[in-house]
Amino acid sequence: MEIKVIYQTLEDRNNADIIESDGPFKCNNNQAWLGSGYYFWESFIENAHWWGRECNSYSNGYVICKANYNLDQEFCFNLIDNPDHIKNFQKTIRLLKEKGLYNNKTTVSRIIYYLKDTLKLFKYDATRVYGVHSKNKNSKYTFSLPFKSHGAQYLDLLPAIQICFYSKKNNLYLRNYQIIFPDKYIEDFLV
Image (cartoon, rainbow, N blue to C red; front, side, top):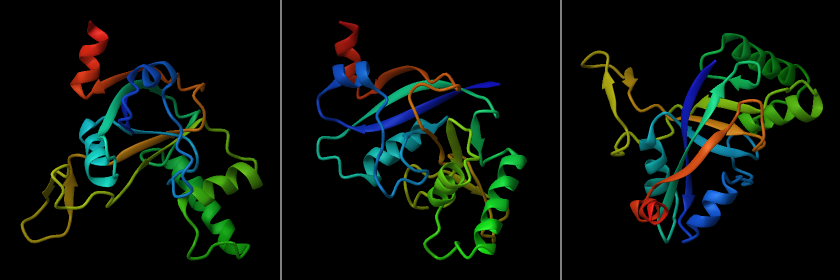
C-alpha cells in the first residue's frame, strides 16, 4: 500500500471556511470521465493549476485543495498500472461488444456504470486513470521529452493522473483535505 498526494481544483467562491469544513466536493456533471464522484489530480499540482486556468471558466479564479489517500489495489480500480484491472476492463468491453451494447457512444464511465449497476461486479471505492492526450501539447502545464529527435513518441513528465472516489468515506482513507492555493486563504487560516 502506498500513500498518494492528490489535488482537487474548485471554483473560488470566497468560501474557504466551507471548503475546509465540507470538502471534498462531488462532481455530478454528466460528462465526468469516470462517473459521478470526487475528482482529484494525483501527484502533480501542475495538473490542478492546468484544470483551474485552462479548462474551466471560473470567473472568480480557483482554489486547490490537497489531500492524501492509500493506494490499495483491493479498493481502487487501477487502470494505470494494475494489469489484472486493465484486463478485466478489456473483458467487459468484449462482453459489451458480444451483446451488441458497445457503440460509438460507449465511454469509460458507461463501462464503469455497466460493471456497477448491471453486472454488480464493481466493488471499488475509486477509479484511477491516466488521461492520455488530456492536455494540449502547447499548454504551459505540459512537459514532455521526445525519445528520439524525429518521432511522435515522448515521455510525459506531467501525466494527467486522475482518481475519482465514489464516496467521501471509503477504504482508501481519503484524508488531510486542506486549501493550499491561493495564498490568501492559507494566510487567513494561519492568523
